[in-house]
Image (cartoon, rainbow, N blue to C red; front, side):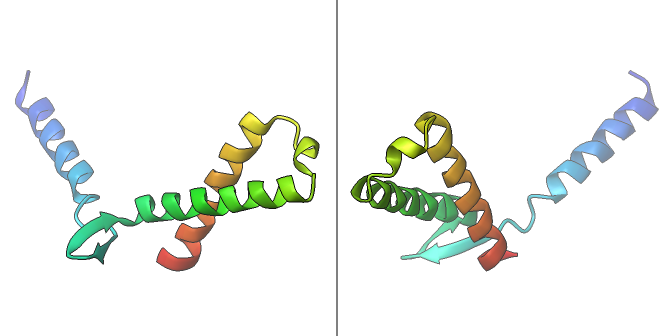
Length: 87
């Protein structure tokens, strides 16, 4: 490899690693957890509560592809939590 290619690879690697410098994390009992993991856990709990609500109201058959609906709700809620609380 020539010198220009090696310099370009080195600069590219430095630029990619600079994005990891300020990763959002919260302190939970002395340990730092990534915020995306907290948002994901909360959204899974909220989606479970939504499922219980839909089952009690007998509305779950209305959401036909459940294998697509519930992961989409988890993704929606986790992104909303991220945007509301951490951006």
